Length: 359
Image 1 (spheres, rainbow, N blue to C red):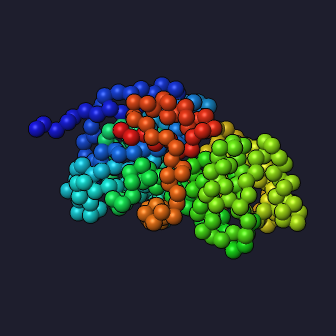
Image 2 (cartoon, rainbow, N blue to C red):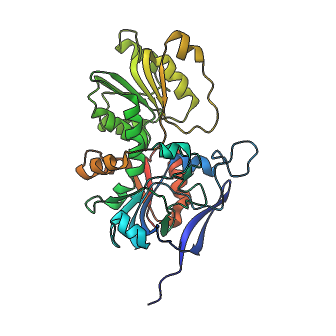
């Protein structure tokens, strides 16, 4: 029987211009892997990109980042269909195995890659945003040469495995926060990654773990997944409450995962002197803050967190053991043809957490 040559895929052609099309199945070279996509997530960055906040390639307003035409999708798991000769020997994979590639395809030539800091690769080819790294909103996808590939145990359900990428990001952010025993930790933003951060932070045995969000639906999930206290800044003075609970000092650690400038300024007011502030969010635009709070007033450690370097094996183990409540986070599973509904659900967020497409 002749091998199938085409597949269905969502293709981004520009701001708001996303189309379900029939395209050629990728061809692979000696160092590459072809997988059949089993499940792929919709990220907040996908929503922002669809609205034009993702810096479409060629825009004069923002630095170039998204390079259409490109297939979106960087949260995924696939079943191996074919491997190049060198990929088969080096990756120890076989057709039928479940596999995932880290969300960035490093160049392995720049200063950062040579130092092992591959997640800050200067070229920065992220799946679903650049033509060299076509994404997972498709029936098949290719792991290009240079991809960092991990095998996924078959005991992990495919739709759960689509959480490996966001969970890896959450682990990295929590590791950057360097939470100590007994710390008062505030995580702002209870989207899927925030809820993963919450569960990972709980493993660090904080003294008090506080979740912030303006959506009651998400705060309810946070309560179920390990928060000692949930606060809605739209309904109460969250800064005053955190200070009240800490003898007026403020929290030891604040992790910002809201994607809102208000989440940044709120954290600077809420955190104690000499505290640790971790900025994770992808913001649609600049967030202006009073930098004197960071320096002159509080001497804060302000850290960024980007992607999930060296965290994929940890994420896979946590999902395999059931330490992370994947089923509570995944609220919707839709076919690829309903990608527009998936984007709408992810954007609305009042009744959705993680939305999964199943090509």
